[in-house]
Length: 162
Image (tube, rainbow, N blue to C red; front, side, top):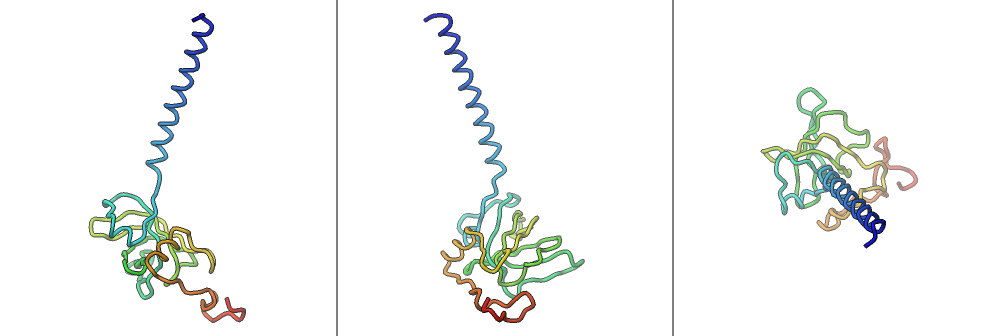
C-alpha cells in the first residue's frame, strides 16, 4: 500500500469514527429529553415510576375541577373513558381549559399516584385534538362531543351550528 493511500484510509476511518461518536452522543442526549405520551389506560397497563416526567392526555372529567387553597392550585381528573388520573397543577390555566375538553399535562406522578403537572395545554379550537389523545380515546371507546352541540365561548349554543 502506498503512503498516500494509507493516509487516505486513516483519514477516512478517523472521520467515520468521529461521526459515529457524535451520532451516539446525540442519540443518548435526545433519548433522555423525550417525554412520552400516556393515557390513563396506558398508565394502568404500564405503570411509570414516581418522579419520571411524561405527558398525560385525555379529557377533563366533568365535575372534577376544584381550586383548593390560594386560587392558583387546581385539581382535576383526566380520563380516557375507562380509567382516570387525578392531576394537580399550580399556576394559571389556559383560557380554553374547561371540563369535558381535551387536555395534555406534562409532569410526573408522586408516591401517592397524584400527577403533579408542571404545564397544562388545552385544545386550541373546537375541531383540534392531539392525535395521541384522539387515538387513545377512540381505542377506549370514549366518544367526544360533536362540535355541532358544543356551546359557543359565551356558553350559549351558536347560531351557525358550531
